[in-house]
Amino acid sequence: MDYYIILAIPILISTLWLFTANLSRTSHPQFVNKSIVLLIAHPDDEAMFFSPTLLALTAPESGNHVKILCLSNGNADGLGKVRQKELVASGEILGLRSQNDILIIDSPDFVDGMNTVWEVEKVADVLGQAFSPQQHTEKGRKDEDAPKATIDVLITFDRYGVSSHPNHIALNNGAKAWLNGLMKGKQGWRCPVELHTLTSISILRKYINFLDAPMTMALGFLSGLKDSRRQDKAGGRRQALFVSDMGQWRQGQRAMTRAHKSQMRWFRWGWITFGRYMVVNDLKREVS
Image (cartoon, rainbow, N blue to C red; front, side):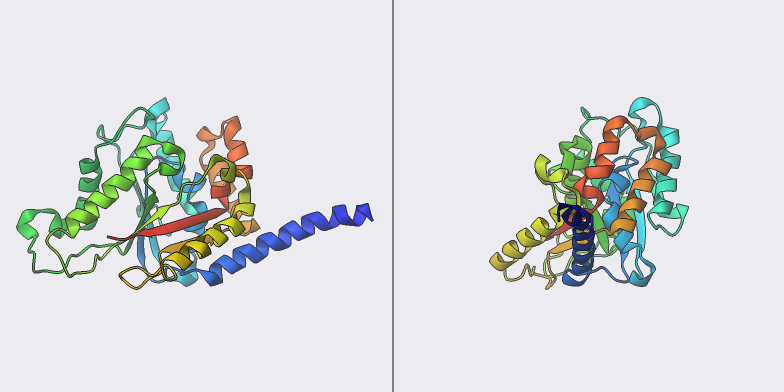
C-alpha cells in the first residue's frame, strides 16, 4: 500500500502542475497582437524573474512582438561584455524573434550595484527617447493632441523590486515618471501604454516553486472581489498570471544554465530549481 502511495505522489504533483498551468492560461487575460517591452536592470533578470511571462507572451499564436530593454550590462564584476552576449543568447531561448529585439544600455548613469541608486529622471528619459520621441521634446508636444507611444505594454518590477535591489526599484519609479510625463496636460485621454509590474512576495513563498500558483490565484480572486473583479478605469482586468508548465520551466532553466553561464554560482542552482519566479509570474496593471 505504501509503495503505491509513493508512486502516486509524483503523478499527483505532475497533474496538479499541469492543471494549474492550463488553468492560468484560460482564467486570466492574455496579451494578443501587442508591442511589448520588458524593462530590466541586468542581464539574467529576464530569465531569473520573468521567464514565465516571456515564454507566454512570445508564443507565436499570441501575435505579440516582445522586446527587452536592459539598462545596464551587469558590469559589477567586470563581465559586462560577456553578460551582454549572454542576454542575447537567453532572449533567443526565451522566444524573442531577433537579436535586434534586445537593447542593452552601457552608460555611467546606470552602474550595476546594490549600493547604486539610479536617478528616476534618467530612467524616464531613456524610456521617453526610445518609445515616445515625438512627445519627449516640448517642441513636438501639444496638449490638445492624443498622447502617443510606439509600444502598447511595458513590463517591469514593482516598487519593491522583488529582491529589494535598488536598480530594480528605480525601473519602477522611472517607468511611472515616464508615463506621468507622457500624460501631463492630457486629461481626458487614455494612456497609450499599459504598465504591468511583477508582484513581490515573501521569502517563504519565493522558494515553493509551482506550489505558489494556487495561492496566487486565490489571493487574486479575493482581491478581485474587493474591486469589482479587478476592473480598472480603462475597463481591463488588473491582474495577469503566467504559470509555466514543466517544459517551459526547463526552458527557463536552460536560459540560465546555457546562456548565463557566468552567473551560475552555487546559490543560483537553488533559485532555478525551487524558485517560484521560475514558474509563476503574476503581473499587476498599474493605473496611469
